[in-house]
Length: 569
Image (cartoon, rainbow, N blue to C red; front, side, top):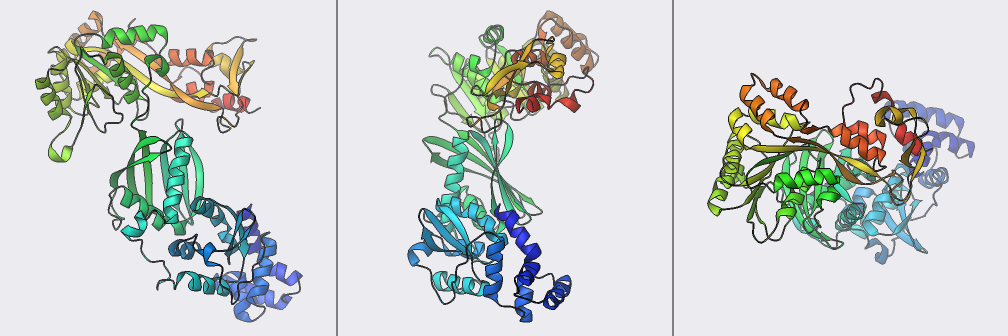
């Protein structure tokens, strides 16, 4: 509402002043002509022309923006209020605390378009904010009296390391609140993105990005400087990508925050991955594996040797699945070693190794060292190259069960990915036990889900009949009005058998194996599991379509949102 009101005030200020009798029609026409050439705010032009004065303009803007007017001429706000805001933030935001009205802090600005800083000040000061208008000259004088002169060149002083790390700095409170809200929202990532005139902050919750806040772009330098200092990055470097990490405790959670900085045309984009190292690991059942799939999974991971792969795109839950496997095997009679990049969760009773490529400790080197440690179970975070693949396979052939991940779209393609890396087919055939491909779908909110008659799309995708019901969720406070709360895995399984091993030995190219695998009785489709979960009311038709390829259903992509539309009806 502030932003809309401010824009209205900017567009019609001259007419408003004319209608109020504050300026003449001739003065308005002259001011409009000047504005076409100089692109200055109407109020500034009218004051420069002598057609009116600053207080008259400010009062008019206050009326149009539905804000009170505060006369700061010759006055200095109380220090107990101005001390709430540091000098850099005050000058950057061009705002100053001037009074208290009950629980609200009244903050003066001289530009109605700056009313958006109210959101930022709420984060910075953790107070209810009420914006008020004053004149530019009075605001400038009050800022100088309260905070000292603004730095030459029209910008605030650069943020020093001490300032960025100071626990008293409001930007520190803003960042702290951002992390607290991210944890409370179950966010996996925080995205901070500068655009023209604003900085957007988004949380990724249950795999979907949601706008959390927008801040004035003037706040961005202090915000980025603080995050860079906290992550051990170079605050002066703004041209190159940087990666760092922040360790902190938030609401009882011991967070390991991975920070990625990327230069963009509007400034540096910052993405932070939140990992709770002490989080409780989930069981096979909690992953979303049904009883049959759990038995299959256990039968493979309990084998004394061989290699077992989990595949899927980034963010599909592969690490969580492998950790569930390790938890299942984590007994005193087994020695378990992992090499990861990064070590995402600490597991008691398991020896975990973080790769350090800069000192030569990569996946393959760690694997070779593992073989001298006499482990029963080995986890390799990811197979990225032929060397790592061959060492992992050799380990699996010498009395170890090896778990790892690759990035492919389906289970059979994980096998051909190893072949494409240059691993000989006979090594793959003799070592590979099975592949689990997976995606994550959003769970329907248990608080607001309900049954309704199945629509045409549900009948088409889920194989329902007319008169059957489908589960939808309309959205509530518990799920943030999204209709979803949490995620569950959907899975595709491939178990190697004699026929599939023979096909690897006899194939002329990788497509021959893909044909054999997709026709095998040991292969279960991701789509089958996704449909079963939607029919059971765990997820929606639109989520099924999002994570699967349904080539035989004409027009499905054009109508894939109908489940969500139905849920909002």
